[in-house]
Length: 603
Image (cartoon, rainbow, N blue to C red; front, side):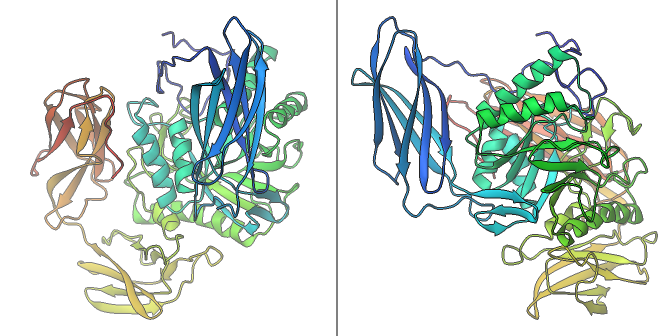
């Protein structure tokens, strides 16, 4: 496997604000096909009809009578088409069936149908393929994004497909877990930055109702004609691979943050339309040339621009909130004041796009901290722009988005303050409750209605001039006058012990299954030491692979390492973590025998 830098292939040729990884980072499958096989299956859902377009190849040395049959499982009878395909030829079948009273896919109701395609040669079954799909109708208009006829503000986040030490080479369950974290984190949309992402991630977006902006690989740089030809091929591959995902609502056909190139982008838009006339295109331009840039794609997108009246509509702010990338406010161990400033940079933009009917929504930059090649923030090639750190731990800002979820789903309350003598006197509380009352050591500091970032679905609560007293700071949230949620901050005391917390306690011995294990430094009360940078030594005992640094410094009182199973090596693994002056920690991971079929489900 040759991982040599290739400046003639996207996204390379200039600086790249993410890491490119060598080796095989996705699943590899061997497919043994009949001499008659389906090359492509595309499902479209105009109105209440389901249309399957199936490209069937006859690789035999004689003509064959082929019957292609479509069944939407549990919902329609079989519909078929017959024809004779000459030897060595490929023909396209288009089969249509109607679904009565279709169930429409949406973030709140991500209903998936299954189409079964059956192919018979000379009357004998030779191929059965299944494709999941969703029925939904959407439109980007000058006054917003409409899904199934209803206005929906896109509250999104950008995601890099990357993990510490492993790059992109992780099992499907970690891809799915990322999608779950984004959806449960308060978002209804995700932008795949800046390349097509794992099919497992996209399938999970289908299943949980997470709207997707997908893009071909690229970052600022556009190369010569040969480079551009590869970029065109990348767009084709992306659309053909991911056509059937109902979560995807638009194809990105412009290199992220690139300068204008009308000749190229007219071709990329035309290519996308020829392959998929059912979806619009979008292009993300540089913020520096927002005032003069051309508009070729269907959706006008710009990074770090928040105009009251966009130059073109439909308009989406595809990246927002870059004010604190280099000043430490996004670090996991940031002070309360820094964390509040970091949150404000996101909240102000969310407040903007909810207030402005001419903006379809926005995508925060970014969901997770990540390693980047450029290192232009001079942060050791770790970009601290995330709402979560690189290990997938929540930063304070993440709770602002989490609190935007409906209170009917779950009442949420979070105090953005570690309650130390250095904490600011203004206390921010993020909650989807109607009212919040604040207490210091049991004494009420008043009860308030939401009063901060007032245009977002669930504004924040700001308590001013709260004097610090060591002990407990408690926020109680009320819905319709009744207590619905409660959060308490306890002043951190002296470090006492380490704790280990694995994401998964059971793995499968397939040679690729893995889990992250969080290390946390706590005081005697179980409170995390939020500014601790202690060195921790990690040891692994048993037949498994350790992924990480055997001696690592905490960031904000915690960090993580990973454990990966070895092929056909079941058993129990003991993990230990130790640090000077505090009690050590241990945890056990069970690795189950791999049967070739078993997998460990998401928790």
